[in-house]
Amino acid sequence: MPKPIAPPAPKPTATPPADRKPTATRELLLPDGSDHALRNLLYNLFTIGNRMEEVRRYMGSCIGITGPQFSLLMAVLELQGASGVSVGKIATYLHVAGTFVTAESAKLAQKEYLEKRTDLRDRRVSLLRVLPAGIKAIDSLLPEIQQINDTFFELESREGFDMLCRAADRLVDGSERVLSLIRHSGARSVGA
Image (cartoon, rainbow, N blue to C red):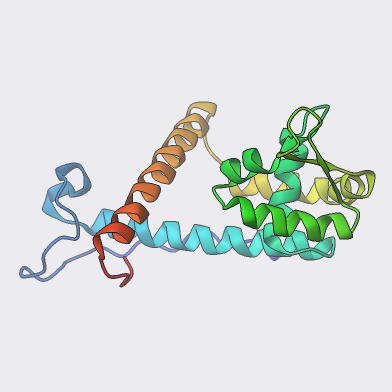
């Protein structure tokens, strides 16, 4: 398991030059007319994303798969029900392309972690189901997964968790709109 993360360092205070323009225009993103809180939030989100990716990579490596394959395996186990879950439903749930799910699920099938079969009701649809070897692999990690999630999401209340879930959903939706905007407007990808 990775080393425990040290408590957060004190946050620097911002005194931006008077001539620096804010990186947003919505007032709610500019407390006291400054974008410092927004910039701090963005840097925190980058850090969280990188750390979550590192954890996902680590968890996958423990059972001989990649980080994205680990997420795929966990999502299939969560959504498969009694008859399996479609490639399309997993792709939507994980916010990835169906071709990605198809390719990675084939690799997991080779490891005998997943079963991929045709839906008898609609032969165009492939259904995924976690096999006993996949369940055994996940079960071997479960105490560590629980500890990681409990530590990563040390929130003060259930209401705080619910608010975080709603905020994350809105950020995912907003990020999708931003990607559409930059793809269709020809905006340059120069970082946030």
